Image (cartoon, rainbow, N blue to C red; front, side, top):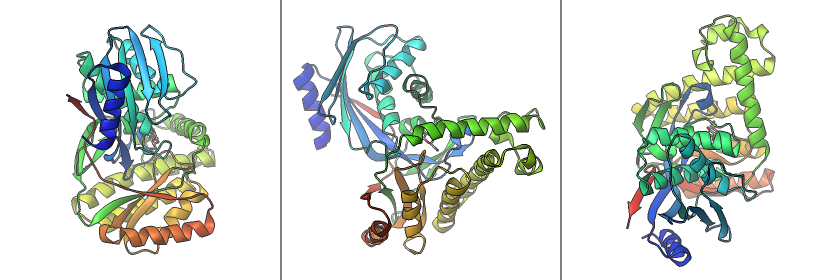
Length: 388
Ligand code: GLA
């Protein structure tokens, strides 16, 4: 057992006395395809080796008893019921949201105990919330024999977040958490939910994450604003072509032709999404040819679009990306996730990692006072469930 795993396991035995099942639930990176998932577009995420560990067992007491190991072992308890109140603690809502959605889908999980903790930095854009949701739904499916596919689990986690937590996220994070495969990125068509694995396992290339440590409330409010702006664009463009259901259906010529019908800001949002979708498709072609340089160029273009057209970047993220532009050891870099803080993702020559980190750090510290942190992410399996 890894030491962190053992810690959670032992804590469970100490608190509840029963033998739990053990779930490992990964965070994710997204190589390219940002803010495209809720526009029926394409994304290219992968599960990583930063995880939440969960120990879970039924308690036959009709109670939900939760402990957050990394938050001073904060505890939460409630009875299994038809509706759940939001907890001011925040974190229980991801778990209650999942139980709530399971019940709304006709499943009847019983009372259970759960202790969780891990090493996914919270709010860094690595989807710790999706990891918690995916871990809980997988654990409950195992404990209570619920017949539910991984894709249904992903959709359920997304609904929990949309309806119970109140974040209007797309499907990417929950999907990646549950479908990850070691050594592969996954291109997901967020409309059809068809997906293809793309090998991403070059020994000479590492995925370096640079964390700004910036966490902004803006991330949620502005996220919902971006969604709305895309919907407004679709509504207007549909007047010219009623077959348009989402930005996925909009050819760039049509957008240009009716540019004047859109507010400039709405036009920019739409243009970004159309271009980003195409970038994902192009980037996947480059991956097939193992052309990491061309792939990396698409990442830089993606960042420029997110910064200038979609406007979800921030000074700290821009400084980090800019710091890599002159480095031959870095083939691509961009902000990752919702934006306004969190991490950049960088493709770096494995044997030059230390040099690159020092270089970025020096440049960053000249311009920004908050400390930057670095993590190396390895692409790994989606959620796993183990019985002892
Ligand atoms: C967050 C959301 C995802 C996705 C990204 C942006 O991570 O949870 O659904 O929209 O932002 O690509």
